[in-house]
Image (tube, rainbow, N blue to C red; front, side, top):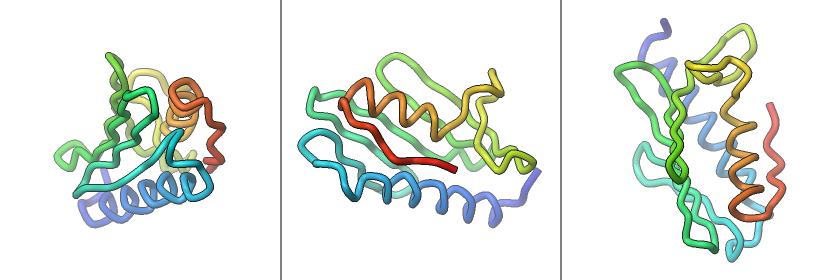
Length: 110
């Protein structure tokens, strides 16, 4: 397991990449912002998607509507993958949510 400083650096890099993907998105469709360790994506339809760190378990958690995911970092893949299904990855899940809720194609790749 990675130590806390490695985890925090990786989480910060991940959150910055998600935020940067919103630079060219109309904020009336979808907007991302940070507050502490929480990244929120707000959509015009009022839905919110929340991504946050979970330091004790070194995970990134994602919640949208009634669904929630817990992602572990896989160093071999250099990706955050779901702890329940390794085929689900953080960036792909965020892209799917943004497309569904904001009708926006988010340029977010590894």
